Length: 152
Ligand code: ADP
Image 1 (cartoon, rainbow, N blue to C red):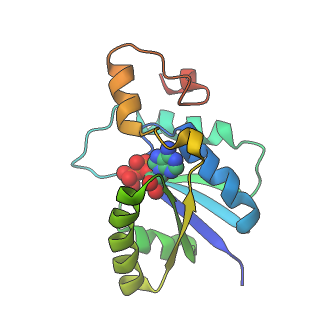
Image 2 (tube, rainbow, N blue to C red; image 1 turned 90 degrees about the horizontal axis):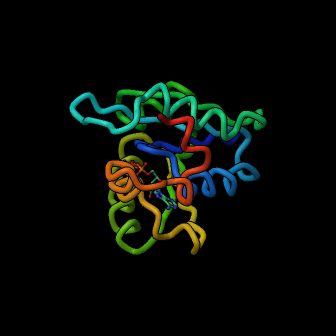
């Protein structure tokens, strides 16, 4: 059976923490889909097309990775693209508690398992929301995001 993993998230923006989770996932999966989940009631700081282009550019040499957007239940999107695993990154026990409930519910809905990968210590403090806060105040975000120039 082909192992196809979906890494879903808002990725507003895609940080070095997200990037490291994908790099760790490459040897584990035959294919990886990075899925930008769009919630029509949510406002994003970075334009969706720019977020997609930014992530694509980071993995342009990787034949097994593709980037797509979706606007539906994560498990439904998994079924659309044939993903049999969901990939999520963990920074701390708070992430774990939150992710655990979602993973249980997703399994209940679809029997799709979630694979958790622990972040590297050096990225454990990075969150997209703090990066947005810095960017909103005209601070530099290049310590947290690779090639941030592609986002603006
Ligand atoms: P969501 O809105 O779905 O939480 P995010 O874009 O914030 O989307 O995060 C997507 C995934 O990446 C989640 O599994 C989250 O825990 C993980 N993640 C976020 N920041 C980091 C980081 N610094 N290191 C590793 N994983 C991270």
